[in-house]
Length: 374
Image 1 (cartoon, rainbow, N blue to C red):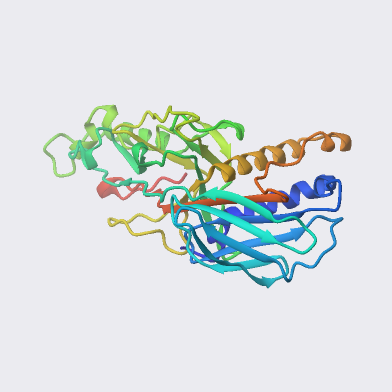
Image 2 (image 1 turned 120 degrees about the vertical axis):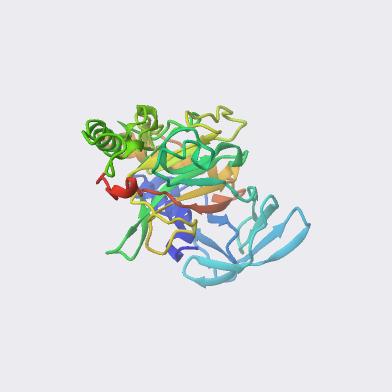
């Protein structure tokens, strides 16, 4: 894992959005009756699981003596009990197992037993290729027929379930990675729920095109020492970068790739069954090897999520966008409570698996070693 911030990225997202929405509509945490238990827990492959346990405003009880149990339903065994850490935070030393079902149980004096169920998604193993060569004499470099630089990801290696993708840029002032503000993809099935209204464009391709045009006009005769014959190939062999994403709609912060059951149109214009992702990323530095991103490089975060977590994240983001656009106070009270899967309580019990992959922005042109700024 790159840093502790990233380890909890999507749980922090949930908490941030809940705080945003709660500030706008306090009544959502004031249900009728004697109040409710609020549970927030996202299982992962990390060695420690975290849980937040609280009460709605009108509830009055001590949570210190709560008994919070996690059971592996696939194995039929009690995994263990969460231990109270501080405030609303609880922890359990355990790494959840992909594709195993789990149940959560919370017992607090004076309340009905709270239960919830989820299933860990399959472990992510998305295959990718770093496209780095810049000399057209290798016309089938890395097995691809086009002349792209950057990173590509194999469609067939995506899990069957929903996947969320975001760019993570390193913020040197904050000393941690933060979400890139926009993201786009050539993958046709990307959910359109969070479009910004703009399309992806980069300044690399027109600069590269002009560079090649200038070389076409080079008066140096063939056979001369300074004649660079590879710049005189047809236009389709000119270097480009993320050209299949250019013109695709920009999404606000996240790409949501629906499950195959929801949308099976996982196709892209990229060759060889691949897709591209681009956006307001700073990206990894170029390397002839393929190491994981270093601690201060940008990267792409792929997150496979359980059905409950997928629905909850989309619901939260749509509600955030809706409330941000509200012009009058009364309209804030027009929605129902947020989706949750906690029985006899409020909140979410979900699961995720993650994979960090490089996003490459290196673009030097062969022996000229020219990097275009974009």
